[in-house]
Structure formats: C-alpha cells, structure tokens
Image (cartoon, each protein chain N blue to C red):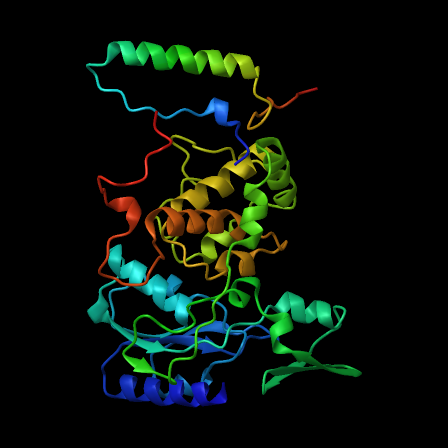
Length: 49
Length: 315
C-alpha cells in the first residue's frame, strides 16, 4: 500500500509475557522514530481563510 | 452467440411456464450499442427480450443476495463463481437457483471498441467468427475480437461455469495464462514509489462508488463508507480518503474476488480498480492456494484457521 515496512509491526504477545511486550513496544518506537514523521496517509486539516 | 440467445429463451420460457422459477435474470439489449443490460423476466411472454452477446459483462450474481424467490440466472464463468461464493456466505440458497451456465467466450470492452473507431458514434455492432463489425454514420470497421477484450477477460482462466443446472453449450477449453504480470511490477516498487503510483492511479476518482455498487461482493446492508456513527472514512476526495476507500474495499474482497471486472467496467473515469483486488487475489493464491468461488462447499481461507497458516510477518 505504500506504508514503510518499519511503521507496521505484528506481534503475538500473551498477557503473561510482560517483558516481551516491553521489548516489542520499545523496538517499535525506536524504529518509527528513526523513520521520522509520516508523510503518507496524512490528511491536512481543511484550511479556512 | 445467437445460439446462446435462442437456448436462453427456450430454457427461460420452459422454466417460467412450468412454474419452476418465479423470475429469470438475464440480459437484454441496452438502449445504446455495446451495452447489454441486466433484465428480470417473470412472464413467459417476455422471454424474447433476453439476449446473450459479447457485451453481457455485468455480473448477474450481484442481483441475488436477499432474494426470497426462486430464480433462474444466466451465469458466465465468473458469475457462477460469485454465485458459489454467495452460497458459501449464506446470501442465497442453492435450491432457490436454477443456474443457466454459459461457457464464456470472454467479454469485450466497450471503451476499447470506442477507442478503435476514434470515439465516433457507433450505431450497431455485429459479431461473427472472432470478429466484430462496428458500424456508424459513414464508417464501418472490422475489429479482431482479441484486441478489444476486457482486461480481466483476456487473462481469464475460468471461462466455464463451476455450477450449472442447464448448460448452453459444451465447456470451452481453458487458457493457461500468467495472470499477475502487472501486479509484480507494483510489488517491485519501493513503498514510496508504490504510494505515488496509487495516488496517480486514483487521481481521477470522484468517489461515486460505482465500483462498489457493481461488485457482487459488496452486499453489506450499510457500507463502511456510508456509516456516519462512527464515520470510518472521510467523505471528501482528499487523496487519503480516496486511498482509504479503495484499499479497504479491496481488503473486504480478499479471498472472495473472482476478478469478474465489474468494478473496472462500472468506473466512469476508467480507473484500473482491479490493481487492488488482484494483488489480494494473488496473495490468496500463493499463500493459501485458493481461488474464490470454485466450490460452494469449501470455506474461504479468511474464515478458517489452520495451524499451518502462513505467519512469518508476526514477530
């Protein structure tokens, strides 16, 4: 669809796997931050003069 | 083709006068050439308006969901697959249907025919021996059938109906085709190029929803784009809204689309809508070895779970 692969993550985490959740969340944040602000699928607010 | 027309009329007359069905759904000549239109006949006296030619592209499976009566319906290969899909999705009962199977000689694209005569007014067309004779004021042109086929028909590998109660002719040979050359080109792009490609592809979209309305799969009582509480997708022609509509619609059709080409045929601005559905069709074929609508008795891949379902994308 034109989404950077780094912005889309799938993971299977059980409710008992707190540490895995932390690891995945941290990794997702790092990767997305590295990519910077998204410029696709972004809708500008209507400009009212 | 005229043989098909004759046979359809005979079968329709027989079924209606014997009271076996309440209505026959077929095609009749449209008000302009190159446009056969869907037609519901419930009186045996009306069967003579039924025809079958190379412009019967409309997918008649679209007229079945939520009907309660007994229906005879003309089905090309793709129509019959959508009917099988409807049966699997509980949209219609098999015993309500008498399917009149038409081994399809593949449909022609009215836009390609119009382009071949430089957009001149066409007053009549005649088909014979793989050729199409197009006539209008002051001109007559003979076209090769293969050159004006609909894009999806040119790569069709299932022209024969998968379900039928009556057959209009013996099954035709199926062609072997690589169906996905165009999709591989899009797959090879970088995400940025792909986004630009889709934006360009949809730049003409006016959000008329003709693609959705023509699609036999789009039978939801309220479509997600019409929903207002909550409003899932903006109603403007902002590129993001338009992309969202097309992507979501395609995903709703994943594993169900038979590539009948209804969406593309209906599009008033000629967008290649099939680019979206076809990618998902390709994925279903490669990941689940699945082709939609080949049998009403097999559950589609997206509503079954198998332990060996591909899951490499999950970390």
